[in-house]
Image (cartoon, rainbow, N blue to C red; front, side, top):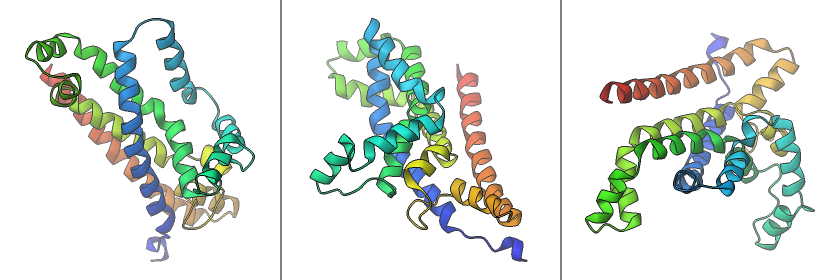
Length: 226
């Protein structure tokens, strides 16, 4: 029966971090993806490379530079102190910032692909009927790319749930504040407490499988409707 006694705090903190991060990823990633889909030239390629860097850079590299930027001596850390936000290192806010940077391509790329696949015809039709750009985006583009928004949200959420290297470097392991599930699993393995590690790992696996099943189901439905 001890196997079913689980420390839910790291799991709930991971879910909270993934939820908050996903909201910010959609708010930040959507305009980036839209601009990239509507742009041409060398600047587009530079922005695309910058956004995609977390896909190829080791998490420790990203975590290291975030550690420098968010520290009290870094310009982001100094700005947060000046604004009265306080120290971002080893805080939930710092984890959100790191998670946004690390998971950004998982939201931007699906949306970028969806916007490009949509083409110009629906947008030009809306313009010809007198719709404004912002109204066209929310009344035409968003409904037509709904499944891609859901897929991007799932990917961003799932990727944030599985983060470890970046979070450990800028957040450490403060219970209730920065000790997410991935860090808790690592600590249990370090202590050779494999039973507790199994408990946390199985829950993360179940959540990840459910999320990916939803994503694949949506993609299958989209292909069937095409």
